[in-house]
Structure formats: C-alpha cells, structure tokens
Image 1 (cartoon, rainbow, N blue to C red):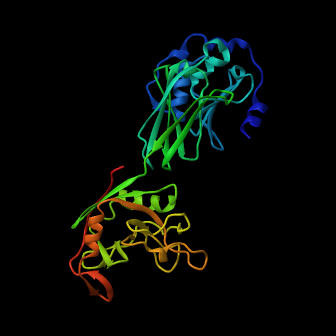
Image 2 (image 1 turned 120 degrees about the vertical axis):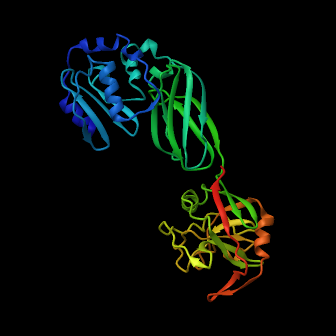
Image 3 (image 1 turned 180 degrees about the vertical axis):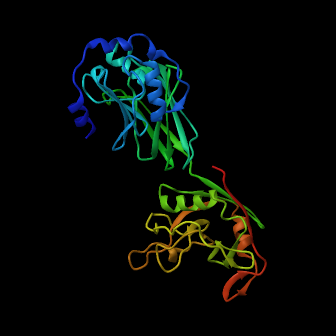
Length: 363
C-alpha cells in the first residue's frame, strides 16, 4: 500500500537534490541510539537540510511513521526499526536502509564495498534483549541488513557513531543455536554465524536448601514464559511446598503460611504436554486442575519416573514438563521425606512448613 501511495504522489525533480549527499553530512556522528522515528527525523533534517528541508508533520500510514518533504518530493519513514525512503535519490523506488548513511550507496556506489570482519553478540539470554554488532570496513554505508529469525522479536537497529560498526537488538524467545546472517542490499549472504543461547535457569531457595531448575523454552515455550513471569514478578517467595507424596511428587506455588491460598496473578495457560518431554525423576512440570488448560502458578517436581503423568493421546492428555532440576536433587528428596498430615481437609500437607524463601533467574 505504501509504495503505491508514494508512487502516486512522487514526481521527478531536478538532480540537484543529489548534491545534498555529497557535502559529507553523511559523516555527521550520531551517538549510538535505538532508531526511533522522532530521532531519525530530527537527525535527517539536521544532517541533510537540502534533502529534508524544514520541520514537517509526522504522518502515520499503517505500520509506517513518515514525513513528506514537498520541496524535494522525498519521503522518509520508519517501521519496525528500519528506515524507508522514496524520492529522486532512490530512483523512485521504495528503498529499505539500515541507516541514513546507506543513502551514500545510491550516489557513490564505489564507497559501498563492505569488508566484513566479524559478528559479535552481547546479552545472550532467553527473554532478554540481545545486541548483535558487525565490524568491518564500510559496513555502515553499504546498505547491509540482518536476516530476521523467528527466535528474535522486536527488532531495532541501533545508530552507531563509528562507520566500522552496524548494530541491532532484538528480544530472544528461544534457546539453543541462534543462526544470524548478514546480507547485502540484494539479499546475498556476506557472513553467517551461530550463537548459542543457553537454557534459562532459576534458583529456588527453600528452608531445606537450594535447587536450580533449567527450563526448556524450545519444547514448552508457553509454560516457560508463564513460569518466568511468576519468578520475575516475585510471586514465589513466601509460598509453600504444600503437597508432598513420597515416591510421586512434591508440589508448590499456590499457598502461603497457614495453608492460605495465594491467587495467581496471570491467566491460565494452554497445556503443552505433547512436547516430547517426559515426567522423569527430577523434572519440573505444571500442576493443573481437571481442565487441561488451567495451569497458572503451581508446579511440581517428579520424585520418580512418573510415566502415568505423560501425554498418552486424546484419552489422557497428561501434564506438561518444562524443565528439570540440574542442581539440588538432595534438597528435593529432603522435601519428599518430611512428615505430612491432613490439614484443613487437604491431605499430604507437611507438618512443618517447607517455605520458598526466594526464586530468581540465574541465567
């Protein structure tokens, strides 16, 4: 829709606008920043006053935030962290660019040969923002871009003040190998590199000792995201291991001292039991009611291989495993050994409360 609209409004003008690109305004340093529409437009108008003259009003067209400069009949817009331009400098074609500096490629192609040296990352952590930086000669003006992957969302280009660098950020929503490709303006692959995103881990501190859980978002993305919401929100400290059945499970996350029910703070989630993970000893799974899609904050640890809790088809949908104990199995067994009784009509409640003192992400 946008290219069609642009083409109906654009009319060829004098080649004089190209002169705006030769005065090295392209070289104006810009401190590293996330590419937001307001910052982009202000920078463009200051760096290229001939091409983008005056303060024009922002317009919103679908996902695009754009400005039109009638004196030069040129459009500049942003959507999803990338720059789009249309006008005489782009030959009347809608052009996607990583930075305004890539305009130089449309006027001085000989300056646009990029020599890519390396690709590096910072902050490889599930659910967090990662920054990927590419280094080399001429990379900031060559119209290069990162091929997007479903493992990353909320992409944002980052403006850098060093012409040897281009950088972007996104939010990681998976774990394991993360393949990143750097492409030229025509989609050719210049560099490909695989980073390893570690499985997230949570440390659970209890009155009987500490455990570390490793979570598997690739197999159970909904359950992992849900559990981490409760961990990051500080829900679990003060809750109990309220159900202990030797040679079966220990369950927690729904009651506080005195066996007082603690209401969940997020909506129930869809069941993910058919994910290939089994209810083996030491695994972490979502507790639920009779409704398969009723899990919220409560979870359990398998004390033995509970094959009877595994998915077995539509006749028995089972319970969703989403992690495992990687440190502290003796603590799990210690919880399983505490004496229990029936309290307030509920069986299998520890006589002496086993309290969760803390829960925090450690990876």
